[in-house]
Amino acid sequence: MTESREKVMKTDAEWRTELSDLAYKVTRRHGTERAGTHDHFPAVPGTFHCICCGAPLFDQAQKYESGTGWPSFWAPIAPEAVETSEDRSFFTRRTEVHCARCEAHLGHVFPDGPRPTGLRYCMNGVAMTFTPKG
Image (cartoon, rainbow, N blue to C red; front, side, top):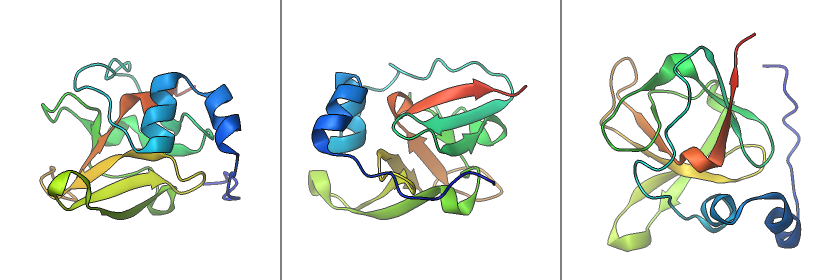
């Protein structure tokens, strides 16, 4: 990937003015959108980007139907595109996924996905934009 890996840092006020209320709640306040409300991306080749900083996150080729109501992927576009951390909210232990470039909360990763990784990156659709290939 030739994208810049320079960290994107903005104030809370800047994020509030640049994002919709829901995108702000999800990406900057670690919220979650309701299942089935934002997985209407076209099923054509392309790339999913961070809504906050534009960094490429996932490729359509790694997307699959998980039945959860959220966009799901078996791997990120590149290992360095996302980072993870432990999330102990809601009386459980999960692995949070966030954008490596701007630290936007994207969703969670679970060990119940398809081959070849066995992972399910369960992402909030509002945290991403989609750019068709070409």
